[in-house]
Length: 321
Image (cartoon, rainbow, N blue to C red; front, side, top):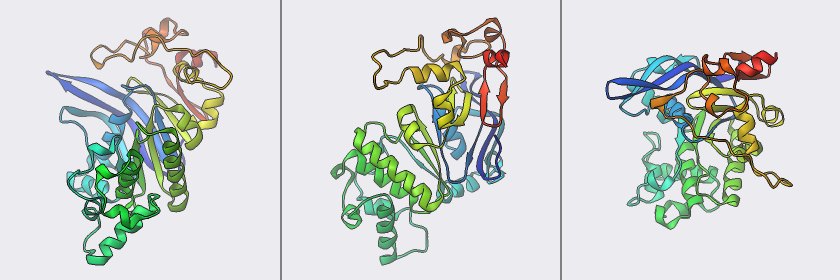
């Protein structure tokens, strides 16, 4: 699965959360890569570790988080070995993040223009700041960006607030944008417009996007490749078309079977819930919910099987091949 155009690599990364005096492993030896100019989706149920993986990349982990092993490479350099000053520089200029629920991240007492101006690179001054902010809002899809400069967050719709966050992410011309559930609470038309615009930005500026979502429908129509995560582990990686047409890991199959399809009146629910970090099952973390589980699944972690087009972690798949 390696390629020369990789801009970001997560290698055998494990993360723990310290509760009491014990570190519970919440990310267990995860590996994936983001290539230049692609949209990569991290998908899975809530509690799968998608957001923690993203926060690990940008170095914004909770205080009780503890890196246990592995590497996170940005353009070949290990972010985990950098100083906090170096990580801040990357967050400021190279890797931008757009979080869900923009209302929580926009200051209600400042206009959009004032908040954008705070991000403009120094020593930009005066009219140049206004021009930079206006251009960034235009890139984010606003047809009348000068009017938006004077608006306050409460005067904008949810979709417009999310575009304002996108403008903030774009203002320093980053190489990577991490989008964490940015379509949550948006109506279908606004979702489609926002994601279509992100796709255009990717092509125009050769951006790399890491999209965190649980909406497989959005992944199918907007992303290039997908990483399926469950309970802090990576179960399957492949192109969106390959995984959608031929899912291999039982969890991936179960996720796809739970999507409403045209002409189908039955949805297959996945029994049970994602396990708590306090009581992870032995072996494959999905085995208590998997109808294909065999004895080895309950005892041993599944091996990572790499083919030229796919990465899969599954005992049943290994035995079948």
